[in-house]
Figure 1 (cartoon, one colour):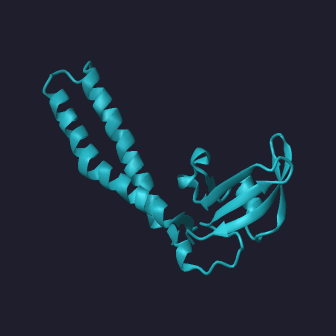
Figure 2: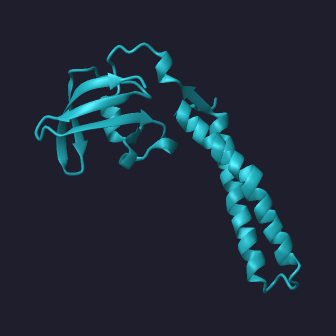
Length: 159
């Protein structure tokens, strides 16, 4: 039984776009670079050839990785799910730090989409795990490296 990997619609689109870029633009460019390097003669001491082969290896690995992730992806379109005020995968949650009154908001997304600076939390992160299943108005204590922080869930958006 294959484990399904949750992914937002945007996350799937980004992976598909990267895959298209790798296959249609990057792969032909690297193949041409290998062919050009081969024309230079002795392959044992040809740094250009070895660099192009290494780049090809890395790129083919990334293509396989993306195809594998897309094959087990469970794309969740949160906009089609009724907003009950409960924190689920794909929602954007607005939080208020109870101690400092600092407001933050995060979208809970798949591991490949996570980017804390852009406000996207991996569903497997400690913060997201603490928030999943809670509702608007709940106060959640989250253990972070510097201690425990309490957040009040102000709003849950399905965007």
